[in-house]
Length: 402
Image 1 (cartoon, rainbow, N blue to C red):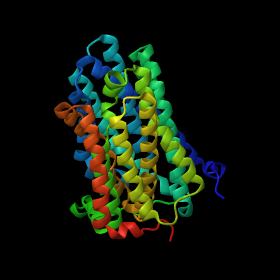
Image 2: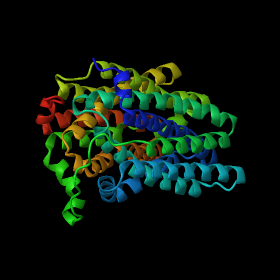
Image 3: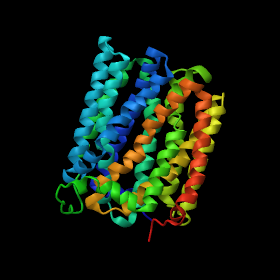
Image 4: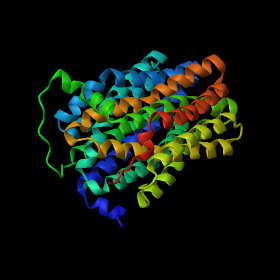
């Protein structure tokens, strides 16, 4: 039985693990601080949605370039530089808060720069994982990484709520320090398998990640389903509204709400790390997305903090199951020399759906109100999952371990 101690015997994997945890905590703390500060400044649901759009735009604009960078340069150093840029963004928010010159425009501009950095960081880290552990334990390694990330998503929002309650400057200073430490750890990672030869830069190589996903239908189905599910079901942008206006709580309550999906996801990831899904992978994948949509509906209707926290916990657990399956599928079926480009396109489909989903939720809430916006998203997620079951029958039969 593979244990956590076995993974930590790989020094590069351990460094990667800690770097990712610190980076995730930092991002979550900053998300709470920016969300609360911007909503206090403008009181606009649409502006909260614009935060997601500001993170989404650089990802969609840079996808093809990101893939090339991840496949042609030292992935460790790419990650480290990205984390330093994110630290600089937090430092700018800190200085702007101290100087009193932060406005909606300046906050969104900083979020845009941080989004551009994360557009490079996320797929590069994803492409790095298969080089750090043997192939036969990749699904378990991914589950371990996700359990750590979910722990960070629990600690981060709660810490962010507490720090913001003490003052926004404390939150941003903490974010800056965490990103700096994560960057140092990333530079210490060492490759454990040799890198594949690089192919020449051509127009075809720029689009090869897109073509690979298009021609590999199980991957296409998995990443596109995640895109539409999270796009429709992403209600996280509206959590400041739910915390203050519907549930009648403060920054600590917002931190608790943002932590709840992570708690559920952590529980699910610990189970998957010990008991990976090897049979009926497809039905489990679709079932997880349907549960995600159902939990979104329950959260949208709730006016009780405890019920809202429980619904978000179930939402996080079901999302984690689908993420581990999709992540493992992409990494195990993609050649190493193409992992950067395929991971970049996958991030465009999946990772950016979180930010675009926040914009969609903010826009829908501005038009119809927060509760109808969440309900529309939850029902839409269920409809999309049922539709994809018919469009991608091969996805229902996938196996992660051959």
